[in-house]
Image 1 (cartoon, rainbow, N blue to C red):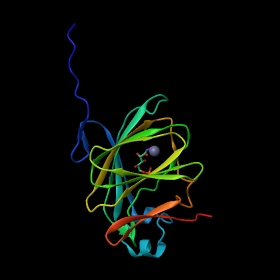
Image 2 (tube, protein in one colour):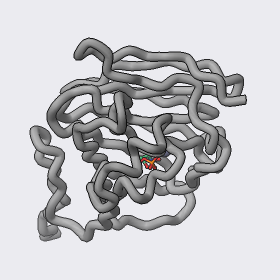
Image 3 (tube, rainbow, N blue to C red):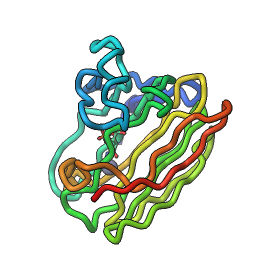
Image 4 (cartoon, rainbow, N blue to C red):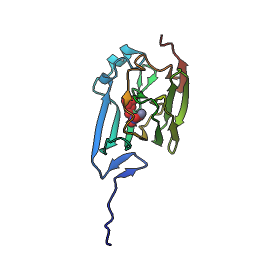
Length: 187
Ligand code: PAN
Ligand code: ZN
């Protein structure tokens, strides 16, 4: 039998650039992130069309049992003193987990369980983050270059952005040129 060799998509590990396959792209800008940062006035003073993060995904089958593969590029910046971050979410199917891999840049992965307990993991080139089910997750860019991370998650998982609409229980601010995590009350 004479089988040909197919060419899979390619991830450039140093930049997080995906190529060679059908891709889906989504940009999230300052104007999309109402109520996400603690200083809403500071957010309104920034240009609404400024991109905070972009997600590139392989356009693969959404069927149950399949996996999605996506890269998040989170730009450096702050709203007031709070670092740029993703919206963050629980999976709609809470039991579904996910794995993140740090590709470039420096930041934090904020993890919060259903009891409201929070953990912060450092994200760096080569970091591996096994996100258990029932755990909300958010990337935070504490550096001054783009933070890129690869994520793989079940198509079944779905996203629930409402459960944490009031915010996570910890926010990360720059103080004296250092990241500082503060516990916040979300009523
Ligand atoms: C990631 C996230 C991505 C963007 O692919 O969706 O980092 O963050 P938000 O979805 O919170 O805006 C993932 O966790 N997928 O499940
Ligand atoms: Zn997720």
